Length: 135
Image 1 (cartoon, rainbow, N blue to C red):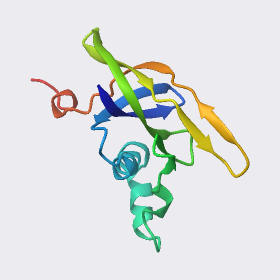
Image 2 (cartoon, helix red, strand yellow):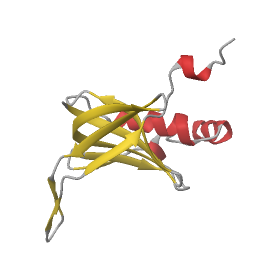
Image 3 (tube, rainbow, N blue to C red):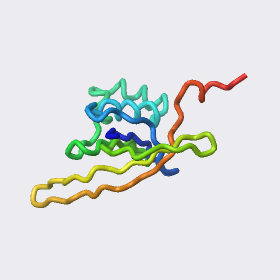
Image 4 (cartoon, one colour):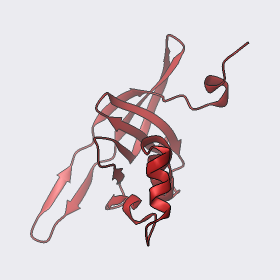
Protein backbone atom coordinates (compact mmCIF):
# COMPACT_ATOMS: atom_id res chain seq x y z
CA UNK A 1 0.00 0.00 0.00
CA UNK A 2 1.38 3.42 -0.95
CA UNK A 3 1.12 6.13 1.71
CA UNK A 4 2.83 9.04 3.38
CA UNK A 5 4.26 7.69 6.66
CA UNK A 6 4.34 10.55 9.17
CA UNK A 7 6.73 10.15 12.09
CA UNK A 8 7.72 12.11 15.18
CA UNK A 9 11.47 11.96 15.71
CA UNK A 10 12.87 13.02 19.08
CA UNK A 11 15.97 12.31 21.11
CA UNK A 12 14.05 9.27 22.40
CA UNK A 13 13.64 7.79 18.92
CA UNK A 14 11.07 7.58 16.13
CA UNK A 15 7.33 6.89 16.44
CA UNK A 16 4.67 6.76 13.72
CA UNK A 17 2.03 9.46 14.09
CA UNK A 18 -0.19 8.76 11.09
CA UNK A 19 -0.54 7.42 7.58
CA UNK A 20 -1.84 9.73 4.84
CA UNK A 21 -3.20 8.82 1.41
CA UNK A 22 -0.52 9.08 -1.28
CA UNK A 23 -2.22 11.93 -3.20
CA UNK A 24 -2.56 14.21 -0.15
CA UNK A 25 -0.14 17.12 0.21
CA UNK A 26 1.35 16.46 3.66
CA UNK A 27 2.82 19.94 4.34
CA UNK A 28 -0.10 21.38 6.35
CA UNK A 29 -0.49 18.11 8.27
CA UNK A 30 3.21 18.05 9.16
CA UNK A 31 3.22 21.70 10.32
CA UNK A 32 0.06 21.17 12.41
CA UNK A 33 1.51 18.08 14.07
CA UNK A 34 4.70 19.93 14.97
CA UNK A 35 2.63 22.71 16.47
CA UNK A 36 0.51 20.24 18.46
CA UNK A 37 3.19 17.75 19.51
CA UNK A 38 6.35 19.78 19.97
CA UNK A 39 5.45 23.28 21.15
CA UNK A 40 4.45 24.21 24.67
CA UNK A 41 1.30 26.29 25.09
CA UNK A 42 3.50 29.32 25.76
CA UNK A 43 5.45 28.72 22.52
CA UNK A 44 2.17 28.25 20.63
CA UNK A 45 0.91 31.59 21.95
CA UNK A 46 4.19 33.26 20.98
CA UNK A 47 3.61 32.29 17.33
CA UNK A 48 0.41 34.39 17.38
CA UNK A 49 2.42 37.54 18.09
CA UNK A 50 4.70 37.21 15.06
CA UNK A 51 4.05 39.10 11.81
CA UNK A 52 3.82 35.77 9.99
CA UNK A 53 2.78 33.33 12.71
CA UNK A 54 3.20 30.06 10.84
CA UNK A 55 6.26 30.96 8.76
CA UNK A 56 8.66 29.24 11.21
CA UNK A 57 6.56 26.09 10.84
CA UNK A 58 6.83 25.89 7.04
CA UNK A 59 8.09 22.38 6.24
CA UNK A 60 11.04 21.56 3.99
CA UNK A 61 9.97 19.60 0.92
CA UNK A 62 12.60 17.34 -0.66
CA UNK A 63 11.41 16.89 -4.26
CA UNK A 64 7.96 15.77 -3.14
CA UNK A 65 9.26 12.59 -1.47
CA UNK A 66 10.12 13.81 2.04
CA UNK A 67 8.50 16.65 3.97
CA UNK A 68 9.95 17.61 7.34
CA UNK A 69 9.90 20.41 9.88
CA UNK A 70 12.16 20.88 12.90
CA UNK A 71 11.80 22.61 16.24
CA UNK A 72 14.64 24.55 17.84
CA UNK A 73 15.29 21.48 19.96
CA UNK A 74 15.84 18.00 18.61
CA UNK A 75 12.24 17.28 17.59
CA UNK A 76 11.12 16.76 14.01
CA UNK A 77 7.93 15.78 12.23
CA UNK A 78 8.85 13.85 9.10
CA UNK A 79 6.64 12.52 6.30
CA UNK A 80 7.95 10.29 3.56
CA UNK A 81 6.38 8.59 0.58
CA UNK A 82 6.55 4.90 1.21
CA UNK A 83 5.28 1.42 0.58
CA UNK A 84 3.62 0.17 3.77
CA UNK A 85 4.75 -3.42 4.19
CA UNK A 86 2.67 -4.47 7.17
CA UNK A 87 1.46 -4.07 10.70
CA UNK A 88 1.98 -6.05 13.88
CA UNK A 89 0.96 -5.76 17.49
CA UNK A 90 3.39 -6.03 20.39
CA UNK A 91 2.05 -5.89 23.96
CA UNK A 92 -1.11 -4.13 22.79
CA UNK A 93 0.79 -1.51 20.75
CA UNK A 94 0.70 -1.27 16.94
CA UNK A 95 3.88 -1.23 14.89
CA UNK A 96 4.15 -0.45 11.18
CA UNK A 97 6.85 -1.50 8.76
CA UNK A 98 7.52 0.48 5.57
CA UNK A 99 10.02 0.99 2.77
CA UNK A 100 10.76 4.56 1.70
CA UNK A 101 10.73 5.39 -2.00
CA UNK A 102 14.07 5.84 -3.78
CA UNK A 103 14.44 9.28 -5.35
CA UNK A 104 17.03 11.65 -6.76
CA UNK A 105 17.88 14.85 -4.90
CA UNK A 106 18.99 17.52 -7.37
CA UNK A 107 21.51 20.20 -6.39
CA UNK A 108 22.99 22.97 -8.51
CA UNK A 109 25.95 20.91 -9.67
CA UNK A 110 25.13 17.34 -8.68
CA UNK A 111 22.52 14.66 -8.16
CA UNK A 112 22.35 12.32 -5.20
CA UNK A 113 20.27 9.16 -5.23
CA UNK A 114 18.51 8.67 -1.90
CA UNK A 115 18.05 4.91 -1.55
CA UNK A 116 14.89 3.16 -0.43
CA UNK A 117 15.26 2.04 3.19
CA UNK A 118 13.11 -0.18 5.38
CA UNK A 119 11.90 1.13 8.73
CA UNK A 120 9.72 -0.12 11.53
CA UNK A 121 8.32 1.94 14.38
CA UNK A 122 5.62 1.95 17.03
CA UNK A 123 2.54 4.10 16.66
CA UNK A 124 2.04 7.14 18.87
CA UNK A 125 -1.45 6.51 20.19
CA UNK A 126 -3.44 9.75 20.08
CA UNK A 127 -6.84 8.08 20.06
CA UNK A 128 -9.19 9.63 22.61
CA UNK A 129 -9.74 6.24 24.19
CA UNK A 130 -6.02 6.02 25.00
CA UNK A 131 -5.87 9.53 26.48
CA UNK A 132 -8.91 9.33 28.78
CA UNK A 133 -8.48 7.15 31.87
CA UNK A 134 -10.85 4.21 32.05
CA UNK A 135 -13.11 3.94 35.08
